[in-house]
Length: 254
Ligand code: PGA
Image (cartoon, rainbow, N blue to C red; front, side):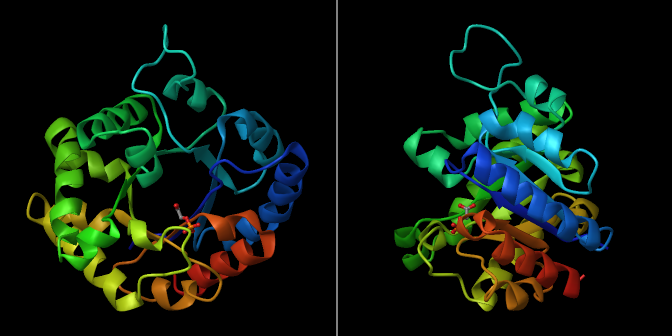
């Protein structure tokens, strides 16, 4: 039995004022959702300490949008998984398509981030997904398998006992073009089948979130699919009402 997880990915958004208002508004829905669903927000690093202060006595969890492969040292501008853990992060997103694309992060490098997060007590949220051209060419699973395989090669299949996967078709991110529940379910099932070819028990237990224009309207049907265990939500996670409606959809389908 997999507990649904709804995770906000704030990206490069927020002010002190908006973060305070949003976290305060979300702590109640998060408390009400637990234990049927888990709720988390992944914040820009500068806001993580603030989120910790605001959410520490609630059921709302939090995490980072990325993490470095090093724990300390001369790596200007990076955020160490040890530091993120010290500020109460549960999760670290790794391999978001915006990082893979704008920062040229390879699957091997993402796997190192996944390992660094896990080695230091964070749960990595591994993002995978294909571009529009790859989708049109029917290459979705070739891309996704390569992204998963890099992690399996470095960390082993058992590592997915303590990780989350987010399937995010790049063509659906921030575009309003949500994958249909059928398309998403098929890919989620293919991901689970691929992992099952290494270890069926691990494949059955790992949570696979859908991301890409997941919103209050699309979440109920997406979350009703057998292999979709919640969502990684960008734009709609910035508005308390929308995000709360998505949390409700997860609870209703738990
Ligand atoms: P979106 O972003 O919900 O705004 O499409 C999702 C993501 O990139 O994680």
